[in-house]
Image 1 (cartoon, rainbow, N blue to C red):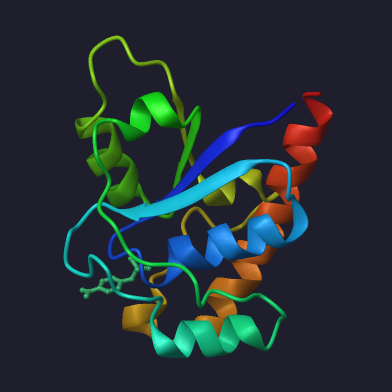
Image 2 (cartoon, rainbow, N blue to C red):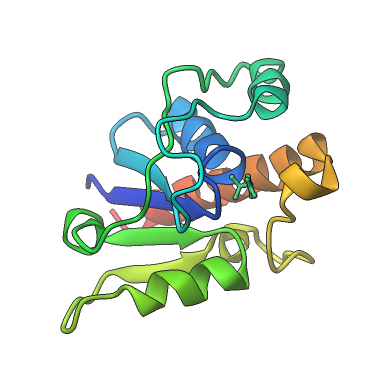
Length: 149
Ligand code: 4NP
């Protein structure tokens, strides 16, 4: 079954494009996109240090451009995945009445995870740690969706 999955973070230049890139590299048959809850970086490519760290793991983010989450995304995507609790609050605040899309944290898909969010590497500068969590989570997401076939 093909799912429509939207990855969401604050700026749409670090965590959500990395999650989109890591997921699409392993699960080609789904529709994927990413967006930011803010409009701060609209039109920008993923942040250079994140692109570089992802590239070293064979994840190419160079074609992605930032955009802001819009209400229509709730109709276009059946699974919307945030990186931290602030993202989830901002996403839920935009949910149109009657919409039933699933909204989850990315770390929910890491089995027995110690992490309950993906720390923002734009501030922590820990791009490797963020990518470790993201890669583990998208593997879990892929397994979760495959099991639902
Ligand atoms: P992201 O990281 O939400 O993972 O894309 C950020 C990138 C930029 C900013 C904040 C978070 N910013 O304040 O510009």
